[in-house]
Image 1 (spheres, one colour):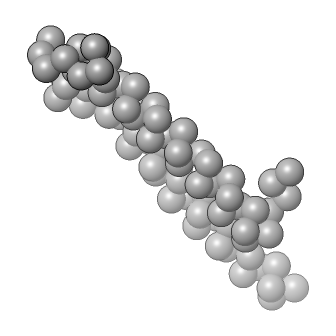
Image 2 (cartoon, helix red, strand yellow):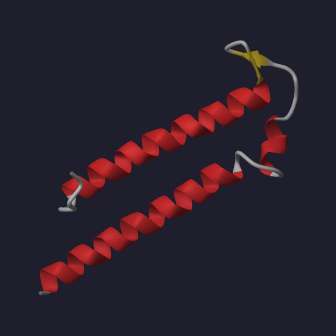
Length: 80
């Protein structure tokens, strides 16, 4: 029984940290934090910098979801 409580506590901590991660990623994609990148130059990979900024954060979130999935499987979650 104690082992299940420890496992639930670890999963809760894991999920809380990833919720914070995704909130930070979301905030960097919307106003006002996206204003950091709101300029027409430089052109990165053929895109204006703001578009590159948003695509970069979406890729970071994608990697975060993959990491969350594998950590969940490792910690004994159902996963599949």
